[in-house]
Length: 81
Image: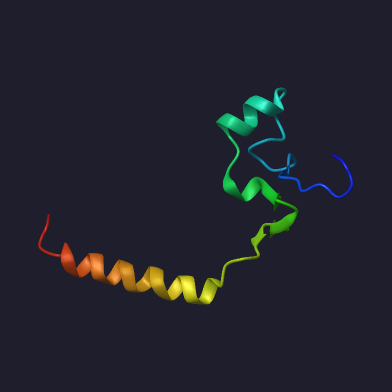
């Protein structure tokens, strides 16, 4: 990396249960790692996930949309077995 340049960086926690026993960390990231193993993500120099928390998402608003969408789907498909 160079000073004054933007970077995309992903920091993975390799101490979690899905990674700690692996001898091949690259393979473990592809085959076993869960989204929760991603600690930090930097895109174009902007931190978009830090300490496992997305920074550009309003979770309260998103949760309301998820619930509304789920209720709509339940209503739409309540007659389907």
